[in-house]
Amino acid sequence: MTVTTRLTWVQEKSLQNHFGGKQFSLLYKASDHEFSRQVLLQICSDQGPTVTVIYSGDHVIGAFIQKSYQEENEVSVKLFAFQETEILECEIRPCTPSMLFPVGKAKPWQRNSEFNIDLQEKYMYIHSNTSKKLGLPQCDSISFKECEVFRCEDVLDKRTMEGVTELRESLLSCIRTYKPYGDLVHQIRILLLGPIGAGKSSFSNSVKSVFQGRVMHQALVGSDTTGISEKYRTYSVKDKEDGNSLPFILCDSMGLGEEEEGLCMDDIPYILKGHISDKYQFNPMKPITSGHCNYIDSPLLKDRIHCVAFVFNANSIEHLSHEMVSTIRRVRRKLIKYGMVHLVLLTHVDSMDLITKDDFIDIYRCLPVKSKVEAVHKELGFALSDILVVSNYTCEWELDPLKDVLILSALRHMLWAADDFLEDLPLEETR
Image (tube, rainbow, N blue to C red; front, side, top):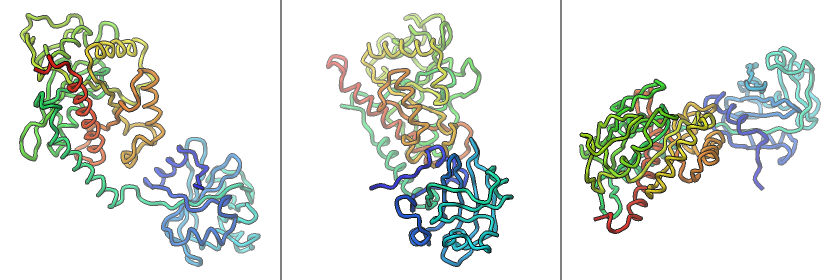
């Protein structure tokens, strides 16, 4: 039977971040392995840095032991305690395992230590000064019901990063060698739609950055609530490796707004059908007409949109207005009418509470991210499998392989979605 921790996800994540981005592996749980000092030391010695966690009523208290401990070797110890939304910490004098985990009733010389745990009697002794620093009750001993010990390891160790780099290279190769379904077009056109400031232009810059090997800012990005992208822009991305254009084009549009703001709804069919050319200046009050200089009279299949990606700021999903939700649903109805495959990109996940860079390795298992994905599914009706997570390059100077993997994975899904669209086209539309 799998032994599981009593820590909540938030508590475990908070501890991992507090001690420098660690990964926890549960080694010992007293209620499963036995309330025994001997058993604990047998399992947990020579395991590298460990975190011992004690559960006492409403209190979660513990000790971070920074090196492997053996029976009589002194180790450095940091004590901690959860106090509502923060972790209080204090360092105590180095001590041996026999001082931390005494046998039977603590001896007088052990009682003079700042902290020890009696597993057999199920109580811990904390010096009054130490208790005060941790915000705990001022008493000599505190009874507890559970004790757990975790091994602490660096998440982003050399082996892990080698795996990330290998995955990044595999994704790059997959996209470089991609060919649209049936060779019907040479380049897939991906339209980015979403509220103003969601990160559409930043995503275009991020994709270009990955393939150019440096952080780039071709598409203008800003924080102005009116948005920066007022023109229809198409970005063909060149690969630094050979200088050739890659098999996709990113199409950046004006942000979706409320009421009479943002992208004109009547422009969307013209964009989808390929009637609007690069650098068309959007007018929220008036859609493009056939007499406009940027209007393409007889667009070919290569001019059309083959996949649409809605871009949302993950931190704003629960705060979308009723008008914006209504606008997005109207757009989706238009896309469904034209048989257009569409996905979701959730951006700004790196700024979510408790999310750190090491979470990018398995981002879809992080509870805050899962809750955002489920919120999009519930509020806007997108299938869970169609909601992708990315972290754009916004203020960095150097590329990060973990961010690259998220960006490339999302891009690969868009290309697959475009293939589905091309495969479903009626024969007469593919000529």
